[in-house]
Length: 226
Image (cartoon, rainbow, N blue to C red; front, side):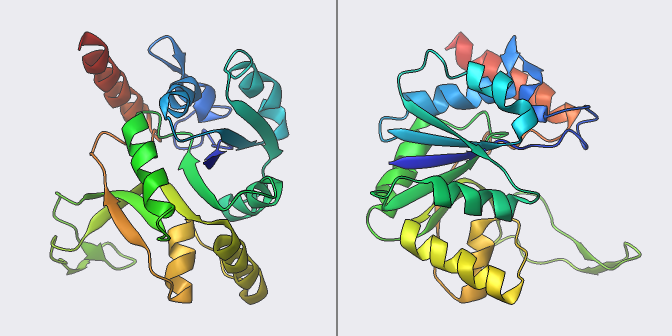
């Protein structure tokens, strides 16, 4: 299985000056923990790391002694452009691809392998967890418009998995119509293509804020104690 890691993370919401994936977490970088999970996933054979050139040297040091095949891919100005570049860099024999946010450093290898198995059956999938909070939809002045029922609401995560040929076709259509999406599942929605939810746990958070670092460290501490 081929996997693309989106690693061009900004530190804006983290309050960092550089890539948040290189911030320390429990004695190592955020991305280093993500790579551990990828290494432990039995289904993954090829990994493309999509990042900004300024981070290439530091990021590629993290994979020097790892036995799986890692490839560096220069990212674009948006996630959508970065994924397009990642798809273009895949080997010619790649039939399916998983796309994972490098900031989801608590992903479990078992989830990666479940996603790999699901897409080889022919379905597009995303990891997600049921929403437990009460959600409010508000207007531009933050006045509540409605409270959607929690039933049927899921928080999208990664990995997300697709047929390479179909995902490339989707990105071509997005470029043609000047669509801008925040993840590839959203692109499939615009095209009316089905995507199935693969349930994952709530620990698979995306490290975005300083509080997320605290939560991630606590989860890692619990895991190491077992």
